Length: 121
Image 1 (tube, rainbow, N blue to C red):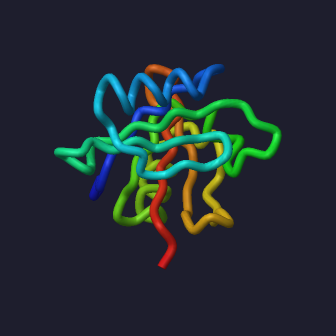
Image 2: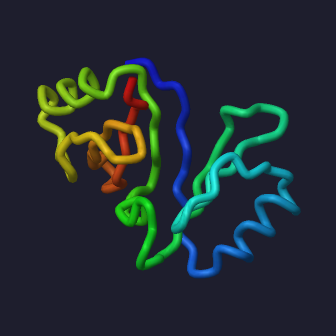
């Protein structure tokens, strides 16, 4: 499986404090800022990223708060087929999202929920 990037998802009740910490103290830059989530990227290694998510009644992706790690892969459909063949627990079935990604959620052996996603062409 081609993994393009892996991002921990950090859930917070205080997005402003989280932004201050990751942007000011650790020096990440904001790569994406949407209602309910901010994605941060390293200034020196842009593929080193993390996501901070919070509850918002109008969040673009309210399901993101249920995810522990988000992976971007080369082929979501191939990853989904592999997960099914392996008998892994599919937490959320594969589907296309309005914001241009195709994804599914799978549970790892430790109980963590992994968002496996790829950008739509």
